[in-house]
Length: 305
Ligand code: FDA
Image (tube, rainbow, N blue to C red; front, side, top):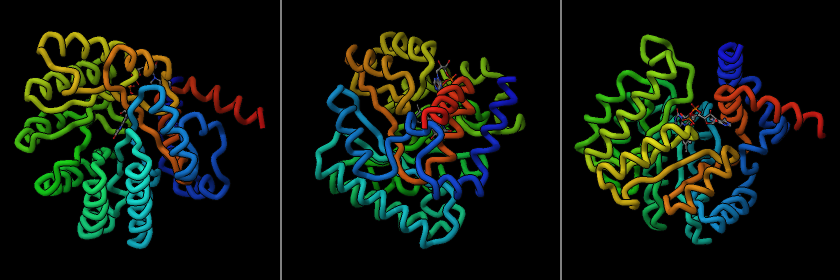
């Protein structure tokens, strides 16, 4: 049943008609639990509160299905504005970006132009930018673009997903770039040909790549809500003598808030991924797919209105 619901929400997350509908009718269905708001002002209020609680942030202007160059440029405008605001308000925040929203499916030129614009502005304000990883069909292209950008910028990192068979190889291959990597389990519906179908194999591979990246001496962001992985990381950093400024934990806004505060109190850098914007629908559906129990929150949200 859980598997069925997971597939259902993953399917819904890619539906363009529902995405447009959601954009039109605003933040509903309980999405407020996972999305900081539709405007930058709303997001800034949330970021300030998290910072006051000792939590660092990475902020994401939501948007995935960009259909033309104009839309991609507008997305980049929002990112530039977000970076300027982080700088102006001295927020403890970084930026996260999806390359499809920068025009990955349109042309490499468009993505480069937009990413260069964002990274130049980010550099000016000392803001770090992470390129999120999307579905496996875009992995190779995303890594190629990351490497090209990394040659010019030191304020850019990317993400590798433990569920992909290729990840171990990618991690080794990226080592030459001294990458700052966020490691995750992976959020998209992927076929068995490219990804481990069993959770236990994903978890094992997750541990393996965390260890590899740390042994390579690269900065590691362990992005998970899973206690077992968090404990593994805590033990590993002791074993390898990795200082607290060479790794961090990351979690999504609205998920395991108490655990986030606990890790921050223990002295770890705890970064919260804070999405905002009108294009919240696909992001929200993926969170429901990860944990169908969250549907309960959605139903409560609907009945409350
Ligand atoms: P897992 O899903 O196994 O969950 C372990 C436990 O955490 C659960 O038993 C539950 O207690 C809790 N939990 C997990 N999800 C929950 C939820 N939605 N609500 C409530 N509790 C929940 N993916 C990707 O493909 N590309 C990317 O770029 C990113 N970026 C990213 C950034 C950050 C900061 C995070 C935290 C995650 C991502 N992800 C991602 C998503 C990631 O791939 C993965 O889908 C989720 O983090 C869920 O996996 P966990 O590691 O949390 O474990």
